[in-house]
Length: 248
Image (tube, rainbow, N blue to C red):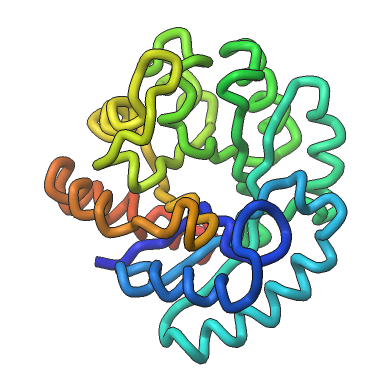
């Protein structure tokens, strides 16, 4: 069971993720032991603004060490970008200038929203449409976390997918409910979207050893059991390999 983890904060010293290089490598090892063979280092955009040069230099160093320590493991660049309507011109400028790296240098970008601060579907849709108009393809991070934003989760997700957006779920959400969001559980929404085959990618949202350590296998196993090998293979590995890594 091979997995590509497209959402992590494993690269050290940039945001609230890994604190140092050794923690980064330990977290990668935990992911690796659970079947992960590709890891995207998608640090929060707020950390990248002042540290993007550190990000690129640390990424290069970490990539070499990870390849030696974990045979067959590849790491890739990315950024998790928190979107608000008024900040979209600056966000796109930072993407174009590589302050906020796209996913492995492709036209795909990982976007997140504020469960408490985003002003409903109108603002979410505006940000996504703005991104699409700039010729970037939005991947919506952890789509199961936005119960307070959706008007109707299923119908809204169908509309967003029809617009050209893609969706990522955190693997632990497939099996665990880590708190309610606006009256609905993350596990409930993750499985609703998976049931209707609206999910394209998975991630662990790994941060640190003491906070959101990697949990890939728990959700991957359930995903296969509940939704079948073919769709599981797409979501766990094939889509990311085709779209974000091989570029076809």
